[in-house]
Length: 160
Image 1: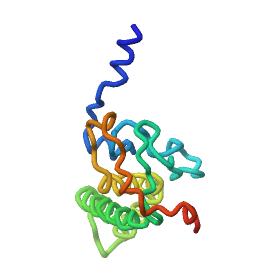
Image 2: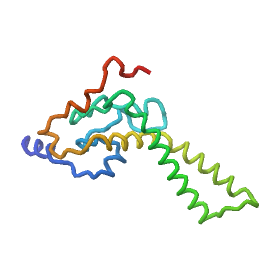
Image 3: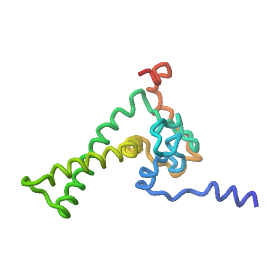
Image 4: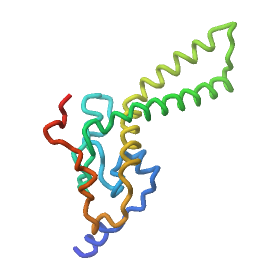
């Protein structure tokens, strides 16, 4: 019975790239969670990440300032979502300069983006690390490439 449980735990997870990114999971093993706390209404610690994946040991902070690039990803996501909300608003309500329908869309879109901001921040971090850390289906037998983390200076970590 214990061998059966062990085999089930060693079974490869057949998670795709999209579900890995949307679920904020480790891009190397696609099993471990990237963030320490679940997304909830309390905004404290929502982007606090594990130092490394709890399943495969992949470091999440590849170098100092690694996640600065997520601002570009977050910006692209918000522009994309704003475009979608504009199209939906245009097709359902319409846009006119004669009344306040455009102002209504601006306010609704701003509220929508503010409510989604915690999720967008997590999603942009998950996307960003997935572009630099590749999926390894044989992660149990392949050791972590230490050359990826050689640029990390321990003394400069969290030195903001």
